[in-house]
Length: 324
Figure 1 (cartoon, rainbow, N blue to C red):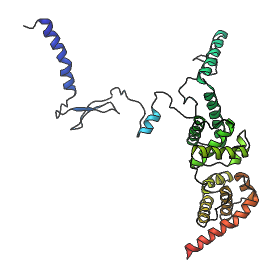
Figure 2 (tube, one colour):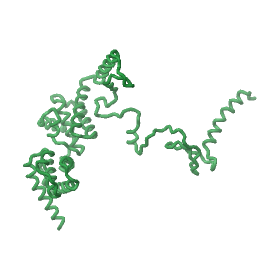
Figure 3 (cartoon, rainbow, N blue to C red):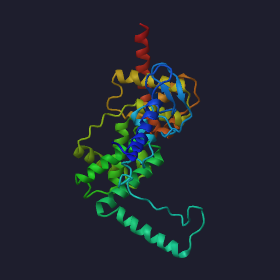
């Protein structure tokens, strides 16, 4: 026979199961109830009856519509990045000598915090390779900020520098030179190129060293850099000069006509873009001069005058062909 304790235990254990099965069943149609994750409601899968609402939603307060957006919004730690020599996985101690409430620390605690910063910095860069990488990535970040280069190109430059460091391409060359060269290559690959002179203005090396290092790094890493397209420079020149969208559209049409007729072959792409913007501005009645375009494009007035007639002739010939 089952004693009173066993009977009492069995009755106690069966009660939650009965309640759970009753709670998971719809009282209208008897089907199983589905609890949605976004609102926390209990809804019948058959008739749509809402059994319970305003429950505690234990999911995140944000919404994501794809996997990339979900990873971006997830708060399980800072995402890894190639822009940091340790990929952002280390701890960074702030420079402010204050506590969480904004109160100043005592002199003894300030000394202790300074020692922690010193040892933390030593642990973050354990060898010369990491110190080299930290300095180079800092240079890439500084130059990118000065030129307005976005994050994707910065990440590409950081990856290329890591490859150059691992392949032993740095001996005999300066850190600043290689950092500038890979940043120039990254902007070319990303479709937002900057000129050598623009990089030289914010870099600590001369343009000749940038060109030599760029050719060497690209050759040794086997990176396929496509030829520069004059179309890629039009948007920046139009924006800096302050032209209208119509001028930019006409400039792109002129470059397309010049490219189809081979006028750009052997010519500097920035010169072609600058001359197309100047010619389009004249056609659209813009009050721009050769000096204005020359200053923002960093090309001489002579280059603009020489390319201006070639681009305009190609555009007029293409327009005549379309009319025929």
